Length: 110
Length: 115
Image 1 (spheres, each protein chain N blue to C red):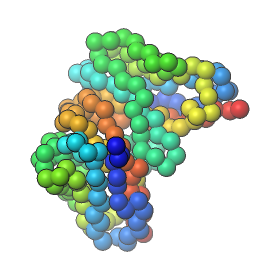
Image 2 (image 1 turned 135 degrees about the vertical axis):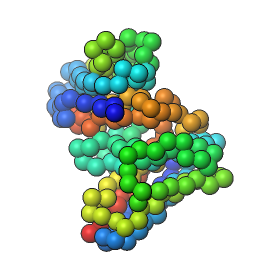
Image 3 (image 1 turned 90 degrees about the vertical axis):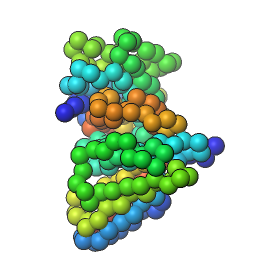
Image 4 (image 1 turned 30 degrees about the horizontal axis):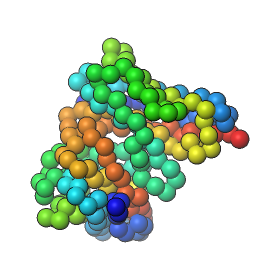
């Protein structure tokens, strides 16, 4: 079945620097790749998604890139701010459900 | 517009007991999905309901079951609890049966501890 690997598990960056989180997937039929942000004590919230007919998508300081040949996609956050501190999850669609990565804890150092 | 509401937020049970968790989706949303979240394991898909019908099911044993009512509210039940069932159980609603390709709106979860 589909497997989604997410790296790193923890990422610590200086405020103002960029952060990159990477995911790989195994199902070549996957065509939808969302990223969710989970703050402490809350449920995950969609921050950006990309479909397989697009290679890159940007929304202000957040961007996602997709390489279907290599089966990997990445989340890029520029000019990080304290409120970016959270756990980030990638996911890939497979067999009418989402398969999730294990999560990345992003720490923004002041 | 009210978000997804899950009850109870916290509960403690002992091995062998059963538990029922409730989820009220966003008004107008007909799809409800359930996930189990444990540290280091991400989110594991349990099942999705749409218009009272189970549309998809993850790889969990039969002790995990669910249902959806005509008002789209959903419940999940875990019978014969095991220590490994300790987790945060998240409910997510969507305006359509997402089939894994639409935005999910999550509740804050029900944290279950099994002693």
